[in-house]
Length: 423
Image 1 (spheres, helix red, strand yellow):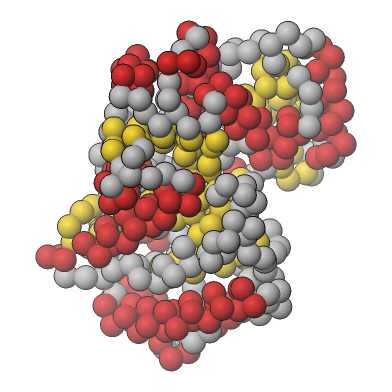
Image 2 (tube, rainbow, N blue to C red; image 1 turned 90 degrees about the vertical axis):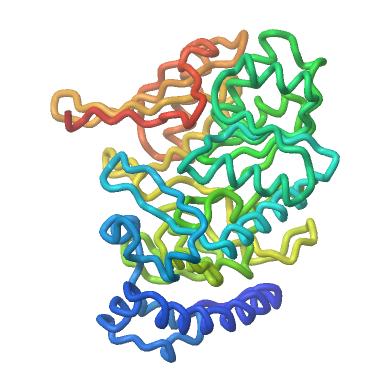
C-alpha cells in the first residue's frame, strides 16, 4: 500500500493479508466469470496483484454492480455448494442476492464468536436477539454466533415490545442484541415502567445504524449496562465483521478474513493509514460470492496502533456516516455524525434529533430538531446548541428544541435526515 506504515503491528497484519490476497485473486480469476471478465477488461492478470498497493489499479465493485449481476451472476461456486441465500434491501432498485457456502456460514459464525468473546459474553449468558430474521443477515447471524459460542439464544426477533420485556424479565436475559434505535426504545420503556430492578442485563451489542455517544449514555444509564457497537453489511457476510471492545477506542475487524482499504470517496485514491475516507473491503476467504474492492460508502479510518485491550486484530474508527448520507448545504459538507458530536458537548441535549432540509425563497435552510433532557430550559439549550453547531461545523442553522420522547422511536432504524428541497 502506498502509505507509511506506522507500526510493526500493521506491518505484520499486511504481510499476512498479502499472502491470502494472492491466493484469493487466483481463485477468483479461476472461479468467477464475472471478475475474470472485469479484470481482463482492465488489463489485469492474477500475477499483477501481489501487494495491497497493487489494488489501486483494480476496478471497484459497488452495489450497482451487484444489482446488475442479479440474481446469481457473481456466484463463484457450483450451485450444489450453496447452502443459503441472503438479500439486502431492494428499495432503490433490484435487491442484492448473496449466496453462502457452508464454509461462508461457518466463517461468519466464527467471526461472531470473536465478537461475543471480545466484549465478554460467555457460555452462561442468555442472549436476546431482536434484529430481523428472514432474508436479512441480522438475526440469524447473531443467533448462529451465540449457538457456536455455547451460550443460550433467545431469538425474539424484532418488535412486540411487551413480549420482549416479558422474555427479558422471565428468562433473565443478560445480553441484548438490537439496533441502537430499538435498544433506546426498550431502555426508555423499562425506565418509564420502573423495571430496572427486574432485569438482569449486563451488556448490549447494538448496530445496523450510526449512533452517537449521547444515545449510548442514555441506553447504558437506563439499562445499567455496558454497550458495544457492532459493524457489518449484508454484502460482506452481515453484522459481525467488526466490533467495539471494552477499551472503546475503535472497532476491531477480522483481518484474517477481510482486507480493509480507505479511499478518497471522490477520487478513489488509496489514502494513508490514519486518514479518514471511505471504507473499501476485499473478502479474503469468502467462497459463494467473494468481493474485490467493494465500496461500502461508510466513512471511517484505520487506526494505526494496537488496542490497549491486547487484541491482535486492528481497528477502524466508529463510522462517522455514509458518503451517500452527506448533506451539502450552503457550501458545507455535513455528516449526521457531526451533529451527534455537537449534541454530546452541549449540556441539556438528548440523543434524539432530526435534520430537516428545506428551500425557502430560493435559499437552502437547515433545521435541527433535538429532544431536550428532562427538566432543561429548552430555549437556553437551543441557543447553546445553535452556537456550538456554528463553531464546530461552521454553518448557521435553525434549532428547534422539543420535549423528551417527541421525535418518536423505531423498532428498526431511525430516520434522521428529511430533505424536501427538491420536492
